[in-house]
Amino acid sequence: MPIDTPSRRLVITGGSSGLGAEVVTRALFKGWEVTVIDRNPSEKAPTVLADLSDTAAAFAAGEEAIGDGRAIDALVLCAGINIPGMFEEQDIETWSKPIAVNLLGNAAVARAGISALKAAKGRLVGIGSTAGRRITPGMSAYGVSKHAFRAMFHALSLELNGVIPISLVNPGTMDTNFFDGRPERFTPSMDRMAPGNVADTVMFCLEQPSSVVIRELYVTDVTVHDWP
Image (cartoon, rainbow, N blue to C red):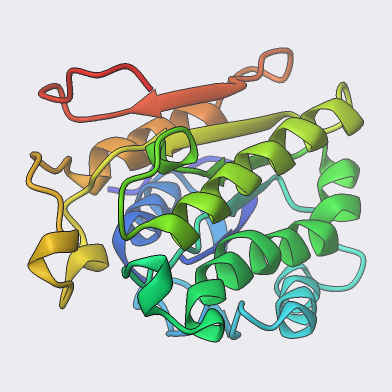
């Protein structure tokens, strides 16, 4: 049964599938009021549909999801795409799409949510990636987007220190549809984590005491032996 607690508001990008959907499930169970921003509707929570590769649309979606004058207790930036391919084999429009979504679209939603987070002393949590520290061939655009995403969170944690608690969760490979339809040469052979385990980590960051913030975490399958 869902836990009966005073309602807290969560807005999440990329909440209709994969890791984002697992976060939505756990937040709803714990009594959060959840709004999703995604290109596809969530089966579990109200959704503001938006193409996050369009920064103006992403910003507008953030404003709509939050609502005029309302505070939010948490904003989770989970939206992410990857279009695998070697740099010299992709046109620049295709190559840059992950950067547009993973970095700029999420940044636009974060910008829309800053005032609402301040009003509730809410938390900002970003979903980075181990690719934000280590890039593999055929993942250049995705790796660039996640390196820059990590840098953005570092900058925001300095600019908003003591105002908004900011956390970054960097998962390794997860068992989601992220790799569906991908050429075999761009599909990792390592074991994949259950996304629910990573979602538990996200909730751990969200539910810390007000005086505590988890700055950055790396979450990988136990068989991954190298350090980020």
